[in-house]
Amino acid sequence: MEIILVFLFSYFSGSIPFGLIFTRLFINQDIRKIGSGNIGATNVLRTGNKFVALITLIFDILKGSIPIIISQQFFPELLQLSALVTFLGHLFPIWLKFKGGKGVATYLGILLALSNELGILFIFSWILLTLIFKYSSISSMFSCLTVLIVTVFRENTVRLIDPNISYNNDLQLILFTFLILIIFTHKKNISNLRNKTEQKIKL
Image 1 (cartoon, helix red, strand yellow):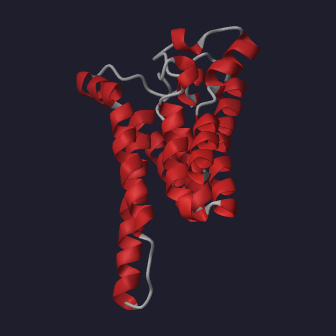
Image 2: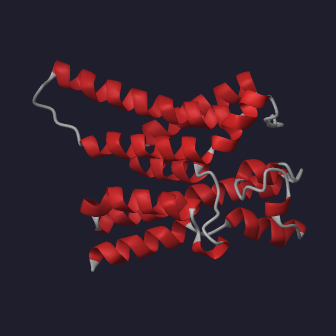
């Protein structure tokens, strides 16, 4: 019963399409017909309305964090399941015929709930890479990779210093899974980068 409960509240939280809701509510447009057609904050920014893009980003982060915080409090043994299902809810929302966003903001929300340090690392990496390359896709994928590498390196280094310290390998596994999924959701962006047709982000 607990597994079903965690699955349901995690999925339905992750599946809320805030980008679509806010663009319809505030600017009376369908975000799926703008730019890349993606429901995430980066594409909302292409409407030219920074306020709507900002609140989309904030709520996409929150919908990633809230299920994890609840699971940490009441169902800690199902934390990894909650994280994965929340993320999949954003990628495959039932309300939009399972065609969702790319998952970056929701991933950040999950990450912040799991580890503030890793969340800050992601934000720092994303901003730095965006300032350098001006491509949200590159920033997102490489920031996810950075978080995974730092996590693996940190935990292995600590083990070398003190073998008695044990880490939960589930964190490494879930971060690796998220990286693969985010690369998958950016497959069109990767193709555009190769063809030099990828749109730069306007800060």
